[in-house]
Image 1: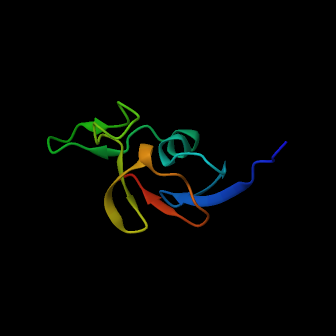
Image 2 (image 1 turned 90 degrees about the vertical axis):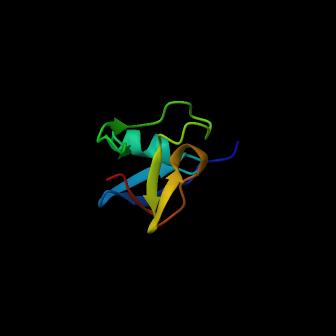
Length: 83
């Protein structure tokens, strides 16, 4: 049976360790996050559809804004910002 490796990344400056193959959205929830970004009217937003259609799970990934966290897998050393 294959073993799952753990990888490390930063979410809002916090070191987080997750299993390889974890989506960014799942890692953010695991780290205690519930708000991924805010709408133009200031309302907190988070994953809704989980399949990349709603865009409510957008985060900044390694300096690139508006990345859909439900569609991207965690990789070692990533830096994610939800604010």
